[in-house]
Amino acid sequence: MDIAIVIPVYNCEKYLRKCLDSVCAQNDCVKEIILVNDGSTDSSLDICGEYAQKDSRIKIIDKVNEGTEQAIVDGVNASKCEYIGFTDSDDNIEPDMFSSLAQAIEEHNADIAFCDYDDEDESGSRSHRRNFGVGAPGLYTKTNGKFDFSILPTLADSKYVAAMRWNKLYRREKLVGLPSFKNNGIRMGEDMALIVPAIMASERIVYVDKCLYHYVQRGDSIVHTYTRQNLDDWKNNIKIFAHAAEKYDYRGVNIEESAVGLLIQNCLKSIRRSGFSFTERKKEYAFIGNDSDVRALLKKVNLANAPGKKRLLLKLLKNKMFGLLAMVYK
Image (cartoon, rainbow, N blue to C red):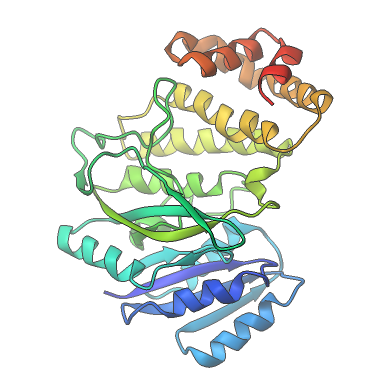
Protein backbone atom coordinates (compact mmCIF):
# COMPACT_ATOMS: atom_id res chain seq x y z
CA MET A 1 0.00 0.00 0.00
CA ASP A 2 1.29 3.46 -0.96
CA ILE A 3 0.56 6.24 1.56
CA ALA A 4 1.20 9.98 1.38
CA ILE A 5 1.21 11.98 4.61
CA VAL A 6 0.23 15.62 4.18
CA ILE A 7 1.35 18.10 6.87
CA PRO A 8 0.23 21.75 6.77
CA VAL A 9 3.01 23.83 8.36
CA TYR A 10 2.58 27.30 9.80
CA ASN A 11 4.83 28.92 12.43
CA CYS A 12 5.43 25.77 14.45
CA GLU A 13 9.20 25.79 14.91
CA LYS A 14 8.86 24.77 18.58
CA TYR A 15 7.10 21.48 17.75
CA LEU A 16 8.03 20.66 14.16
CA ARG A 17 11.13 18.53 14.74
CA LYS A 18 9.29 16.20 17.13
CA CYS A 19 6.48 15.90 14.62
CA LEU A 20 8.79 15.15 11.70
CA ASP A 21 10.87 12.67 13.70
CA SER A 22 7.71 10.68 14.40
CA VAL A 23 6.50 10.88 10.79
CA CYS A 24 9.85 9.91 9.30
CA ALA A 25 9.88 6.86 11.60
CA GLN A 26 6.90 5.39 9.69
CA ASN A 27 7.77 2.29 7.72
CA ASP A 28 7.96 1.72 3.98
CA CYS A 29 4.20 1.93 3.41
CA VAL A 30 4.64 5.72 3.65
CA LYS A 31 6.02 6.71 0.25
CA GLU A 32 5.50 10.51 0.38
CA ILE A 33 5.70 13.09 3.15
CA ILE A 34 4.34 16.36 1.80
CA LEU A 35 5.09 19.46 3.88
CA VAL A 36 2.96 22.44 2.89
CA ASN A 37 4.60 25.56 4.30
CA ASP A 38 1.71 28.01 4.48
CA GLY A 39 3.67 31.26 4.60
CA SER A 40 5.49 30.66 7.89
CA THR A 41 7.41 33.66 9.25
CA ASP A 42 9.53 31.71 11.76
CA SER A 43 12.15 29.03 11.05
CA SER A 44 9.62 26.33 10.08
CA LEU A 45 10.60 26.34 6.39
CA ASP A 46 14.29 25.94 7.29
CA ILE A 47 13.43 22.96 9.49
CA CYS A 48 11.45 21.43 6.63
CA GLY A 49 14.48 21.81 4.38
CA GLU A 50 16.73 20.26 7.01
CA TYR A 51 14.55 17.13 7.12
CA ALA A 52 14.19 16.97 3.34
CA GLN A 53 17.96 16.60 3.16
CA LYS A 54 17.73 13.50 5.36
CA ASP A 55 14.60 11.78 3.99
CA SER A 56 14.00 11.50 0.26
CA ARG A 57 10.27 10.93 0.82
CA ILE A 58 9.83 14.57 1.85
CA LYS A 59 8.48 17.06 -0.67
CA ILE A 60 8.11 20.73 0.31
CA ILE A 61 5.45 23.05 -1.05
CA ASP A 62 6.30 26.64 -0.11
CA LYS A 63 3.40 29.02 -0.63
CA VAL A 64 1.83 32.24 0.56
CA ASN A 65 -0.48 31.99 3.55
CA GLU A 66 -3.98 30.93 2.49
CA GLY A 67 -5.07 28.91 5.53
CA THR A 68 -5.20 25.26 6.49
CA GLU A 69 -7.99 24.29 4.08
CA GLN A 70 -6.03 25.39 1.02
CA ALA A 71 -2.84 23.82 2.38
CA ILE A 72 -4.66 20.50 2.67
CA VAL A 73 -6.02 20.74 -0.89
CA ASP A 74 -2.59 21.67 -2.26
CA GLY A 75 -0.89 18.82 -0.40
CA VAL A 76 -3.37 16.16 -1.48
CA ASN A 77 -3.31 17.36 -5.09
CA ALA A 78 0.48 17.08 -5.08
CA SER A 79 0.38 13.50 -3.85
CA LYS A 80 0.61 10.46 -6.10
CA CYS A 81 -0.35 7.76 -3.61
CA GLU A 82 -3.58 5.81 -3.40
CA TYR A 83 -4.00 6.53 0.30
CA ILE A 84 -3.75 9.80 2.24
CA GLY A 85 -3.00 10.49 5.89
CA PHE A 86 -2.50 13.73 7.78
CA THR A 87 -0.73 15.04 10.85
CA ASP A 88 -0.71 18.51 12.30
CA SER A 89 2.74 20.04 12.53
CA ASP A 90 2.61 20.46 16.32
CA ASP A 91 1.49 16.88 17.04
CA ASN A 92 3.30 13.54 16.89
CA ILE A 93 2.45 9.93 16.14
CA GLU A 94 3.41 6.39 17.09
CA PRO A 95 5.93 4.62 14.76
CA ASP A 96 3.34 2.06 13.69
CA MET A 97 0.41 4.42 13.18
CA PHE A 98 0.07 4.26 9.42
CA SER A 99 1.13 0.64 9.08
CA SER A 100 -1.61 -0.28 11.57
CA LEU A 101 -4.24 1.74 9.72
CA ALA A 102 -3.07 0.39 6.37
CA GLN A 103 -3.29 -3.18 7.63
CA ALA A 104 -6.86 -2.58 8.82
CA ILE A 105 -7.91 -1.09 5.48
CA GLU A 106 -6.41 -3.97 3.54
CA GLU A 107 -7.87 -6.61 5.84
CA HIS A 108 -11.40 -5.19 5.63
CA ASN A 109 -11.31 -3.52 2.19
CA ALA A 110 -12.34 -0.30 3.93
CA ASP A 111 -12.43 3.27 2.64
CA ILE A 112 -11.33 4.91 5.90
CA ALA A 113 -9.52 3.62 8.97
CA PHE A 114 -9.25 5.58 12.20
CA CYS A 115 -7.58 5.16 15.58
CA ASP A 116 -7.75 6.54 19.11
CA TYR A 117 -5.71 9.51 20.22
CA ASP A 118 -4.72 11.18 23.45
CA ASP A 119 -3.98 14.69 24.68
CA GLU A 120 -0.38 15.71 25.27
CA ASP A 121 0.55 18.88 27.10
CA GLU A 122 3.58 20.93 26.18
CA SER A 123 5.74 19.10 28.74
CA GLY A 124 5.03 15.79 26.98
CA SER A 125 2.65 14.44 29.65
CA ARG A 126 -0.22 12.47 28.11
CA SER A 127 -3.73 12.26 29.50
CA HIS A 128 -6.86 10.25 28.76
CA ARG A 129 -7.71 8.56 25.50
CA ARG A 130 -10.64 9.87 23.55
CA ASN A 131 -13.69 7.67 23.01
CA PHE A 132 -15.24 7.89 19.57
CA GLY A 133 -18.71 6.76 20.51
CA VAL A 134 -18.84 4.22 17.67
CA GLY A 135 -18.83 1.16 19.90
CA ALA A 136 -16.47 -1.77 19.54
CA PRO A 137 -13.39 -1.74 17.30
CA GLY A 138 -13.65 -3.38 13.92
CA LEU A 139 -15.47 -2.91 10.63
CA TYR A 140 -18.57 -0.76 10.15
CA THR A 141 -20.51 -1.15 6.92
CA LYS A 142 -23.12 1.29 5.65
CA THR A 143 -26.60 -0.22 5.53
CA ASN A 144 -29.81 1.45 4.40
CA GLY A 145 -27.82 4.54 3.50
CA LYS A 146 -26.14 5.10 6.88
CA PHE A 147 -23.67 3.82 9.44
CA ASP A 148 -24.99 2.66 12.80
CA PHE A 149 -23.15 5.40 14.68
CA SER A 150 -23.62 9.16 14.66
CA ILE A 151 -21.31 11.14 12.39
CA LEU A 152 -22.48 14.49 13.79
CA PRO A 153 -23.54 15.58 17.28
CA THR A 154 -27.19 15.29 18.19
CA LEU A 155 -29.19 17.02 20.89
CA ALA A 156 -29.83 13.78 22.75
CA ASP A 157 -26.28 12.35 22.66
CA SER A 158 -22.98 14.14 22.09
CA LYS A 159 -21.05 10.97 21.18
CA TYR A 160 -20.15 10.86 17.51
CA VAL A 161 -17.21 9.84 15.37
CA ALA A 162 -14.50 12.42 15.88
CA ALA A 163 -14.32 14.57 12.76
CA MET A 164 -10.60 15.27 12.73
CA ARG A 165 -8.56 14.57 9.61
CA TRP A 166 -5.39 13.52 11.45
CA ASN A 167 -6.31 10.25 13.18
CA LYS A 168 -7.45 8.61 9.95
CA LEU A 169 -6.23 7.05 6.72
CA TYR A 170 -8.31 7.55 3.56
CA ARG A 171 -8.60 6.23 0.07
CA ARG A 172 -7.52 9.23 -1.96
CA GLU A 173 -10.62 9.06 -4.16
CA LYS A 174 -12.84 9.61 -1.10
CA LEU A 175 -11.24 13.04 -0.61
CA VAL A 176 -10.55 14.51 -4.05
CA GLY A 177 -14.02 13.62 -5.33
CA LEU A 178 -15.83 15.52 -2.58
CA PRO A 179 -17.72 18.73 -3.36
CA SER A 180 -16.16 20.13 -0.15
CA PHE A 181 -12.59 19.39 -1.32
CA LYS A 182 -11.72 23.04 -1.79
CA ASN A 183 -11.04 26.16 0.24
CA ASN A 184 -14.42 27.00 1.78
CA GLY A 185 -12.95 29.85 3.84
CA ILE A 186 -13.57 27.95 7.07
CA ARG A 187 -11.25 28.74 9.96
CA MET A 188 -12.95 26.82 12.78
CA GLY A 189 -14.22 23.37 11.82
CA GLU A 190 -12.43 22.94 8.49
CA ASP A 191 -11.78 19.29 9.34
CA MET A 192 -15.49 18.60 9.72
CA ALA A 193 -16.17 20.18 6.32
CA LEU A 194 -13.86 17.58 4.79
CA ILE A 195 -14.30 14.50 6.97
CA VAL A 196 -18.09 14.35 7.42
CA PRO A 197 -18.72 14.29 3.63
CA ALA A 198 -15.91 11.70 3.27
CA ILE A 199 -17.71 9.43 5.76
CA MET A 200 -21.01 9.97 3.95
CA ALA A 201 -19.32 8.98 0.68
CA SER A 202 -17.72 5.83 2.14
CA GLU A 203 -19.18 2.35 2.36
CA ARG A 204 -16.84 0.65 4.85
CA ILE A 205 -15.01 2.21 7.80
CA VAL A 206 -12.76 0.39 10.26
CA TYR A 207 -11.99 1.42 13.83
CA VAL A 208 -8.53 0.43 15.10
CA ASP A 209 -8.49 0.24 18.88
CA LYS A 210 -4.99 1.65 19.37
CA CYS A 211 -3.92 5.05 20.68
CA LEU A 212 -1.57 6.05 17.87
CA TYR A 213 -1.90 9.85 17.64
CA HIS A 214 -0.76 12.40 20.22
CA TYR A 215 -2.63 15.69 20.07
CA VAL A 216 -0.61 18.50 21.63
CA GLN A 217 -2.67 20.96 23.67
CA ARG A 218 -1.39 24.48 22.97
CA GLY A 219 -2.66 27.48 24.89
CA ASP A 220 -2.64 29.59 21.71
CA SER A 221 -4.49 27.00 19.65
CA ILE A 222 -7.38 28.19 17.50
CA VAL A 223 -9.72 25.87 19.44
CA HIS A 224 -9.11 28.03 22.52
CA THR A 225 -9.99 31.29 20.80
CA TYR A 226 -13.22 32.78 19.48
CA THR A 227 -13.91 35.33 16.78
CA ARG A 228 -17.18 36.17 15.08
CA GLN A 229 -15.99 34.26 12.05
CA ASN A 230 -16.83 31.13 14.08
CA LEU A 231 -20.50 31.82 13.38
CA ASP A 232 -19.90 32.14 9.64
CA ASP A 233 -17.82 28.95 9.75
CA TRP A 234 -20.70 27.18 11.50
CA LYS A 235 -23.13 28.29 8.79
CA ASN A 236 -20.79 27.15 6.00
CA ASN A 237 -20.32 23.75 7.63
CA ILE A 238 -24.06 23.17 7.94
CA LYS A 239 -24.54 23.97 4.25
CA ILE A 240 -21.76 21.53 3.34
CA PHE A 241 -23.25 18.74 5.48
CA ALA A 242 -26.73 19.24 4.02
CA HIS A 243 -25.38 19.22 0.46
CA ALA A 244 -23.28 16.10 1.09
CA ALA A 245 -26.20 14.26 2.73
CA GLU A 246 -28.29 14.94 -0.38
CA LYS A 247 -25.50 14.06 -2.83
CA TYR A 248 -24.61 10.77 -1.15
CA ASP A 249 -28.18 9.97 -0.04
CA TYR A 250 -27.01 9.74 3.55
CA ARG A 251 -29.99 9.07 5.79
CA GLY A 252 -28.54 9.07 9.27
CA VAL A 253 -28.34 12.78 10.05
CA ASN A 254 -30.87 15.24 11.40
CA ILE A 255 -29.19 18.34 9.99
CA GLU A 256 -31.17 20.81 12.12
CA GLU A 257 -30.49 19.04 15.42
CA SER A 258 -26.83 18.60 14.44
CA ALA A 259 -26.66 22.30 13.63
CA VAL A 260 -27.80 23.13 17.17
CA GLY A 261 -25.27 20.71 18.65
CA LEU A 262 -22.48 22.27 16.62
CA LEU A 263 -23.62 25.77 17.57
CA ILE A 264 -22.86 24.87 21.19
CA GLN A 265 -19.58 23.16 20.32
CA ASN A 266 -18.10 25.65 17.86
CA CYS A 267 -19.54 28.94 19.11
CA LEU A 268 -20.87 28.93 22.67
CA LYS A 269 -18.14 26.66 24.01
CA SER A 270 -15.45 28.64 22.18
CA ILE A 271 -16.68 31.84 23.83
CA ARG A 272 -16.67 30.16 27.25
CA ARG A 273 -13.07 28.96 26.98
CA SER A 274 -11.65 32.12 25.38
CA GLY A 275 -11.10 33.86 28.72
CA PHE A 276 -13.58 36.66 28.03
CA SER A 277 -14.96 38.87 30.80
CA PHE A 278 -18.65 38.69 31.73
CA THR A 279 -19.36 41.75 29.58
CA GLU A 280 -17.53 40.28 26.59
CA ARG A 281 -19.30 36.93 26.95
CA LYS A 282 -22.69 38.60 27.16
CA LYS A 283 -21.92 40.67 24.06
CA GLU A 284 -20.85 37.66 22.01
CA TYR A 285 -23.75 35.47 23.16
CA ALA A 286 -26.07 38.32 22.14
CA PHE A 287 -24.43 38.55 18.72
CA ILE A 288 -25.14 34.85 18.16
CA GLY A 289 -28.60 34.86 19.74
CA ASN A 290 -29.77 37.79 17.63
CA ASP A 291 -28.57 36.26 14.36
CA SER A 292 -31.54 35.61 12.09
CA ASP A 293 -30.35 32.12 11.03
CA VAL A 294 -29.79 31.09 14.64
CA ARG A 295 -33.20 32.39 15.69
CA ALA A 296 -34.94 30.54 12.86
CA LEU A 297 -33.13 27.32 13.79
CA LEU A 298 -33.97 27.55 17.48
CA LYS A 299 -37.65 28.01 16.63
CA LYS A 300 -37.66 24.88 14.45
CA VAL A 301 -35.84 22.45 16.72
CA ASN A 302 -37.55 20.76 19.66
CA LEU A 303 -35.20 21.73 22.49
CA ALA A 304 -36.91 19.20 24.77
CA ASN A 305 -34.72 16.56 23.09
CA ALA A 306 -31.62 18.16 24.61
CA PRO A 307 -30.28 16.95 27.97
CA GLY A 308 -30.53 19.29 30.97
CA LYS A 309 -27.50 21.57 30.62
CA LYS A 310 -27.74 21.86 26.84
CA ARG A 311 -31.45 22.57 27.09
CA LEU A 312 -30.83 25.34 29.63
CA LEU A 313 -28.16 27.02 27.48
CA LEU A 314 -30.30 26.87 24.36
CA LYS A 315 -33.42 28.19 26.10
CA LEU A 316 -31.47 31.12 27.51
CA LEU A 317 -30.12 31.83 24.03
CA LYS A 318 -33.55 31.47 22.42
CA ASN A 319 -35.20 33.75 25.00
CA LYS A 320 -32.42 36.34 24.66
CA MET A 321 -31.40 36.03 28.31
CA PHE A 322 -27.79 36.75 27.40
CA GLY A 323 -26.69 38.10 30.79
CA LEU A 324 -27.91 34.99 32.57
CA LEU A 325 -26.27 32.84 29.90
CA ALA A 326 -22.98 34.66 30.47
CA MET A 327 -23.33 33.98 34.22
CA VAL A 328 -24.01 30.27 34.00
CA TYR A 329 -21.77 29.40 31.04
CA LYS A 330 -18.36 30.78 31.90
